[in-house]
Amino acid sequence: MYGIMLALGVLFYFFPGKWISVEKDSVSYLNWEKREGVLAGYPAFLDFFRNLLTEKYFLHGVVVMQSLLALACTFWFVYLLKKEFRLKRVEAVFLYLLSMLPFSIYLPEVGITHQIMTEGITYSLFYLFFIAVIKTVWTVQYRWYWGSVVIATLLGVIRTQMLFLQVLCILLLIWISVKRLGKKNVGIIVGLITFLVAGMLFKFSDRIQIPSQFNTVLVARGFYEADPEDVDLFEDDMMQDIFMKTYQMADEDGHLYQHAEPGLYMWRDLVYDKMRLYVAEAIIEYDMENPGLRESGEEAIVRELGIKVLINHLDRYFYHAVRLMISSFIASVFFQIEPIYLLCHFITLFLYVSAIAACLAVRRLNGDKRVTELGVVTLGILVMMVVTVNLMFIGLQRYVVYGMGIFYCAMYLMGREIIKRRLTIVCNKI
Image 1 (cartoon, helix red, strand yellow):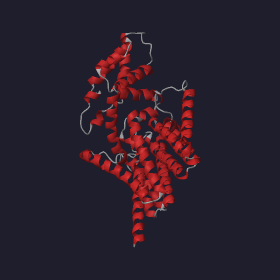
Image 2: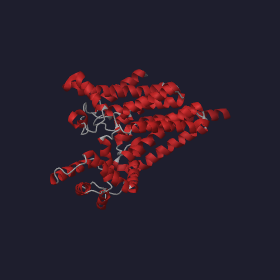
Image 3: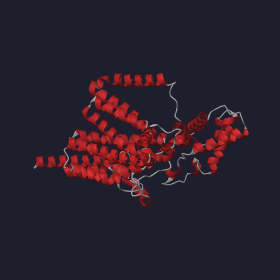
Image 4: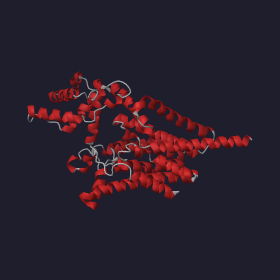
């Protein structure tokens, strides 16, 4: 069985599609001069292989390691499920195939592990994070909890969006503390954790600098909602001038909310992630027209443009965030197939409703508690991922597909448990 699984892993992760795929975003990870705003984790991973294998061959080493990491992490995940639920050999092989789903979204052109992108390792590490989380829930042991914290921190230095896992870890800490110390102490536990988190933020607040990547996202989400009269939100002439220049460029290129096409595919137009380029060009024009007058740095200007416009249009921002969430929910468990895209909405709704119903059914039938917990944790992480990613960033398919394989494995195990419990009830009646 394990031999078959490993053979399937080698075939799937190593062979399909292009061997090395350098994407547009890959340049920011590969070139030192273009790494501003990029988190250090993935560039450090690339530099390790560059120093080990030289410039000529290091990308080959990166692809091999990414593929091996995916093979190993998905293998460990399925091994855990087989051990916990005493799965048959054919079931383990089937679940191993399901665990490959997130890595298949760009096939047959290219596999995720062959792209020089952060997803090449974060998809795999996410399986390790999930293993630590579900083992924490099953065992109520702090050692597994601290394992989840370590992996969440590692993911957080590779991809900005993975920082939401730290929030999940705080919620998990509250849960495990209540389980171990009792519900009577829940108020004390929550208060203590809140106090510790707030104290750490206060202590290090003066040392924390907002990364330029956050400012880029902020202006992309905020300025997209701008109206021309928003120029009055800014008090000084410099900010008003830069606002108008930025607005005119974005408006001419059709990258503001009023240019979004209504309908099912509205989400495609609902954010322009290169908005910062307009701001940079507006700043250059202002400096040329007013040499030596600008006192604020680019980061401060970008941040102010994003924050003030966003706050002024929070209602529209939340509406557009919800519209983005709809497409992300589809991408998290299914595929966005253009000819049947409306049907994809109903399929996704059916899948989520079925998962919730399955969790309730396993519990009502007094099935294995671990199966219910697996389903609840999976759904909770998926929903939290979709919501946070679209509130803070942009919910592209590759940003929210992390849990697709886990979702279908959980669905299979819940369906298996329901059938088993039903058969037991019928046999007892006979």
